[in-house]
Length: 70
Image 1 (cartoon, rainbow, N blue to C red):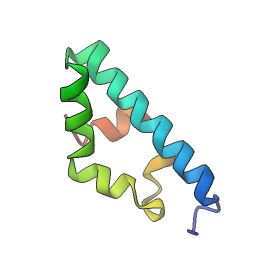
Image 2: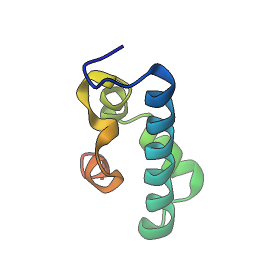
Image 3: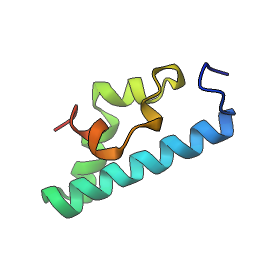
Image 4: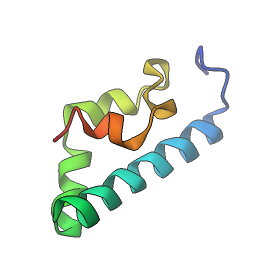
């Protein structure tokens, strides 16, 4: 699948967990509504990069990835 040696299922799981944690941080720590946080993540240019396993972003911390969004 990619140079990160993860299966498509592992990649999907890691990406979903990272995305969920980023949304949680935006809601709990930044005061976003759930809807706004979801929109902020999924419409950001960095989410497209996160969706590409070859970037390796799914291995990074949620705060690191969020630093490119907020």
